Image 1 (tube, one colour):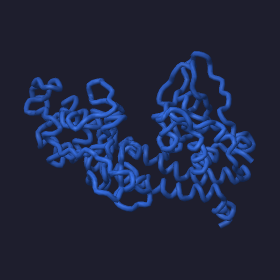
Image 2 (cartoon, helix red, strand yellow):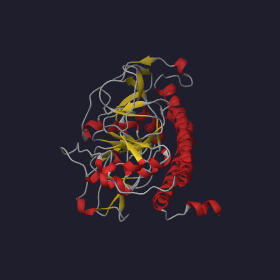
Image 3 (tube, rainbow, N blue to C red):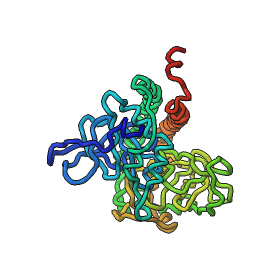
Image 4 (spheres, rainbow, N blue to C red):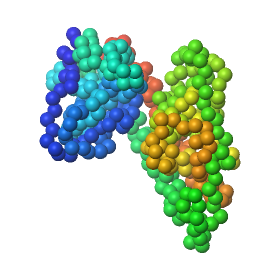
Length: 392
């Protein structure tokens, strides 16, 4: 059997002409996260993939395919998205939508798609036949549903933790903006505003360049022969490829000496997309695409909130210009608002427990993903007998 016997590939979807419909862009698909929701609506015109609730979106372009940008569409209405998605739909009475999503994570299937890629360097795309003609065998529908149910339990726990993280992040960001953007900190009524390079700020506050208040380490990639995936050496991060919502995940390791980020350092991407942020959760080696930032007074929690507020969702250096890369001088020249130390320390007392809970939840998510990813190939291949589990 081949995959197209079980799955409809790029099925036809009728959308109301010129109406506003849910839209899924490639950037909202997070590797390792099952469900994707539309972040916007657009007119149902022009080219683009079209899909219905429950369909699986499978990235076909480099590096999104290699990075595992695959998700199940969880919108309530049919929608459209990037032209760079293949769409997979379960066949009625033959396959289960959840199982189709998990089968799309099959390493052999993804490898077949990657091998089919062609086109200009950096814009290579897989061909649909690499999926439709992929040889496979699905188990009976009840077993598909049982397998999907087992794996879904892990994804539900992951999504619950992700929702809790978003609440905690919004609490921290709201406090930061209240005190350090709108300047409504305790006692602000008696503090006049004065001009600064970043606009009016409270009297007694300063604007300094990053180089004056932080230690900056720019990455430097060793030669390729020192890299491995076996865990030998120190974890190596080239850029945003391994970034998570807050902490990076390890994919490559390096045995050569290089530029190091310590646990707690803020990782800042200096190559496109510029300005993305993560936090090193242990000692790592920095590639050319990253820099590491540490506050000279160890005000890391405050610095994280400040940089995150400044650069969140932006591929820019704060002046409206898109950058393919930034230099050390660009980084050192970033202007930061520096409130009095006592105010920063007061805010940190609020930030720290929120950040600590986020770190705990993030570790739980990592553990759940690791367990799920170990189970997935064993369940799909039949190494684990789900019928025996039911009778255990």
